[in-house]
Image 1 (tube, rainbow, N blue to C red):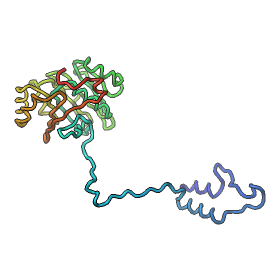
Image 2 (cartoon, helix red, strand yellow; image 1 turned 180 degrees about the vertical axis):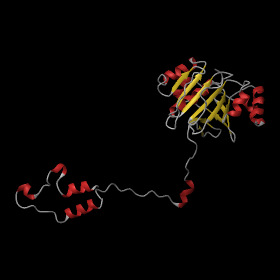
Image 3 (tube, helix red, strand yellow; image 1 turned 90 degrees about the vertical axis):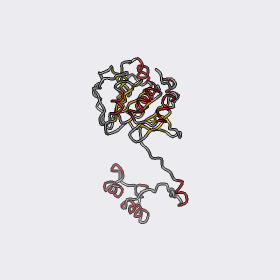
Image 4 (spheres, rainbow, N blue to C red; image 1 turned 120 degrees about the vertical axis):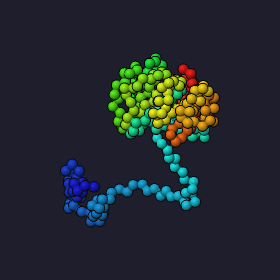
Length: 275
């Protein structure tokens, strides 16, 4: 409580109205409160007012400590579930440049873009097939609520920042040209390749994360040599079901199944590898 408030309580009433006295109530001398008044003023001077509700303390016995578990992991976009059924999270909003290559279907790229926009990121799509993104853009508000579509080579600077991170999705076919807008602080770039192509090895080597969906045995053998994949993964890639992706980083490999929500099924359909 401030000094000005204390002075108001001791002197004039609120808004300058004098405090009520016995004389004002019906004549006679004012009878000051010699007990409760001093106690109230003392409480106000010392900073104590009305007491709030009392709650019991939250305690945990030593025997229960082993049962206490706090899930700690990266924050970002939930891209599916892993082999153990646990959520797989991809951190796209980073203060450093981050390049992702997805060798797979348009459906998975659109789910990632949709979920990235739901986390607050702005999504800029560079594509030669704008019609494939039009329905999704209209469903999100006509480009005003996080997703914009541009022709190949026409993506303007996005002005990414910590408050407005950006995901650039490059859906430019088998041989995407070098992009004018590249990855940077708080701006990640996801390049979609429907299949392997002569430019794929270069893009894969430059990427921080690579996702691979079902490809042919010959493509799996070539990609296995480029990425140093174990023989078991090379043999598995041609048999992957729709919606399953092998995500590979420098230190980890993980199979992830992307499970769409009802809203995503209504907008994008069921998981599919072919477009």
